[in-house]
Structure formats: structure tokens, C-alpha cells
Amino acid sequence: MNIVIRKLVFNDSDIHVLLWKDRPCFLVSELSKALDSVNKEDIPVFLRNGGNAVKGIDFDVVAGADARDLRSYLESSGIKKRFAHTMIIYFDGLRKYFNYRKTVESRDFLSYLERSKMSLDDATVSPVGIIETSDTAVKTAPEPTPAVVEAAPPAPNLPAKKANSGKKDNPVKTDSTKSEYSEFLKHISFMEEFVDAFNKLKITPDKSVAFTKSMVKFLEDNGVQTSTFLQEIKKWID
Image 1 (cartoon, one colour):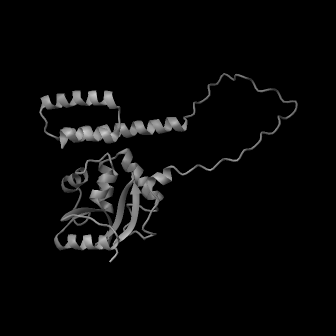
Image 2 (spheres, one colour):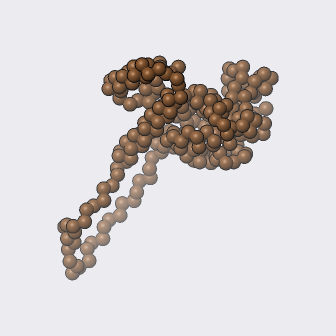
Image 3 (cartoon, one colour):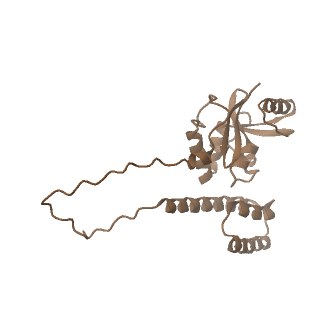
């Protein structure tokens, strides 16, 4: 039995869209890995304690005989997974999670789904082939070269254009500026997520001060690099 509808690639991580109980869904473990600014427990904690997520409607925990069946179905599609139980999230549940955790990365993932002709509002998803274009390939696709049009010669007997009309030119953002701004927003969004998670932890004031000093020193030495910063954070909150 083939339950794999599609295979997506986001942030260099495989994400399989599965059909479970006749409804499309994702493996939470794969989503947590692909959304690299998300702590691996963030989605499960939201689903269990978020208040508006309902088991059986928004998500399910697959265990026992169902887990054995799921592993077998995945293996029949060439996907080997090891788990005694695993959590899956249906489209409704993921939409609720993204409404709760509004990050730049979640918006990027939703845009990627749109480019892949998918929507979390759909109750069903038609298979269009197991291998999908990765988000990296879409982002780095070359822009079409614009045609070069030669300017027409100026009309005769027309007054020359004044060199300075007294109006200031509107600055135009370059691709580099847009990229830097996008990265800045991503880092700010990441820090907001971290502060929100950090405030939920019951950490004594003295440890909080030590953490702040350590983070300042880390940022001075390494700059803001999401992957290394996450590793540094895990030393304190794991």
C-alpha cells in the first residue's frame, strides 16, 4: 500500500506528504527538522497543550499496530523510519500551528507549498509524482534576461531636460538590500520565538544572567548564525 502522496524538499530536508485515515498529513519529526528555527518539541507541545488543537482532527499519535503498519507502508515506498510511535499532523493542525507561530520561515514554507500547487486549506491532495522541486532550486532559478531596447533619438526642436528638477529621486532597493533585510527579519523573528520559549521555562534569575552574558560573548565571537546559535542555546535549555 502506497501512502506517500508527495515528497517535498525544504531547507535541504525531506518532507513526505502522507495519506493517513484518508486525509493528507505530515510527519511532525520531518517538519521539525525542516523548519530549522523550530525546537523539535515545539510542534508536539503546541498540539498537546495549545488549547485549540484536537487529537483525531488536527493530529494523531500513531502507536502499536498502527505504527507497525505505518512503518511497513513507508518501507514499501522506499522510506525507512525507526519509531515505536510517532506524531502526525493533518493540514488543519498545521494551519493552526502556523497561525500561532507566525515566523518568516513558516511564511516561506507556505509560499513553497503554493509553488508546489498545494494548500493547507485542501482536504485532499492529488499526487503529481513522488519527487518535487526543492525550495532551493526554485529560489535559485535564473531570472529571464530582459530584452535590450535601444532608445529612440530625441525629437527635434524640443527643449533640453533640466539637469536638476528640484525633486529628489526615490531610492531603489537593490537585491542585496532586500536579501539583507529578509535575513534581518528572519533573525528578529527567531529571537522573538526564543524569548517566548525562554520565558516559559522556570529558570532562576542567576542562571538567566549567566545565560545572557554567555549569549553576548557568543554573538561577539560568532555573529548571528542560526544553526550555531541554536546549538549554543541547546546547551542551556535542553
